[in-house]
Amino acid sequence: MGAKKSDNNGFVPHHMNITADDVKGNDGIGRYIILPGSDGRAAKISAHFKDVTVKKHPRCHNFYMGQVETNGKMVDVAVVASGMGSPSIDIIVNELYRLGARRILRVGTAGSVQPSYIRVGALVIPTASVRDETASACYTPREVPAVASLAFVESARRACSVLGITNVFTGVVHSKDSLYAREFREGPMALEHEGYMKILRDSGVLASEMECSMLFTLGAVFNQQLKSAKLENTKGQPHGSYRFGPEDQFLTGAVLAVIGDDSAFSDDILVAETVDNAVKAGIETVKQLAVSEMGL
Image (tube, rainbow, N blue to C red; front, top):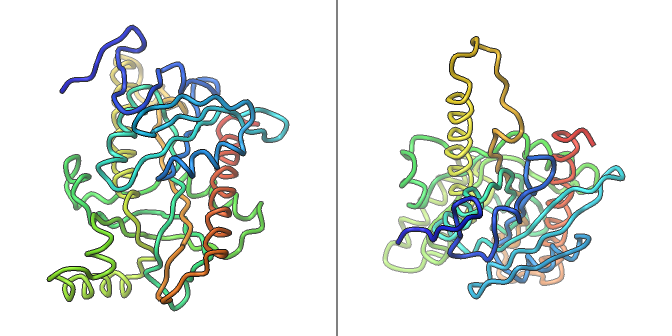
């Protein structure tokens, strides 16, 4: 089924009630967009914004627009739920990209793959993700790594430092299709899943979730599309005379709250505090990136 057409940038999304004008801002870079999994968390994140406007959708991919302040300047931001899993984030990120979004940060949850030293309460800043899901393979071969944008990784590390959050780990995470089979060993392939997760643990993978590899793969694909378009528009100019501006780049990153380890029971209060820390770190990450990109 093809996308509906309109006069607004030629594209109308099927899963969000927004237009290209809604993602504009920040001197051409566009809004910094935060992607949690659920609409409930999106609403909580938007409580940190100023001058919030909500554009609702029946699928609960409600789009919360607002601003955050840093160094006395206002930064245009938005938050929308991606839903769970790679196919859902594939849809939402594609639609945001087609509307002009260029900066997307996932703020979500994960389970520890290294419970001996990463426990509930920690934050993980992914540098890349194991592509143990099938949606991203529709875009690039599995040999192509799913890597977060360095600018987001560096901004997230600065954000945690500014906030005084010290229980933070940076490295590779794991993105899967099935929570119950792969992580909880449900079904007749339980032994295979157990062996696979041990391999990840022995390989130094930090945490497991369900969206980062898709987000980072799309980030690489869309980033290259923007650069290719820029090069096409500068044909005939002397080699090296062109520069890629912020608007010519598609950046993706993530901040993850570790809410599961090898404990039989989770501390609900600690889990809530960890998610809250991830939200604060995510918002501060956006501020840090805006400072570096916009010279605020």
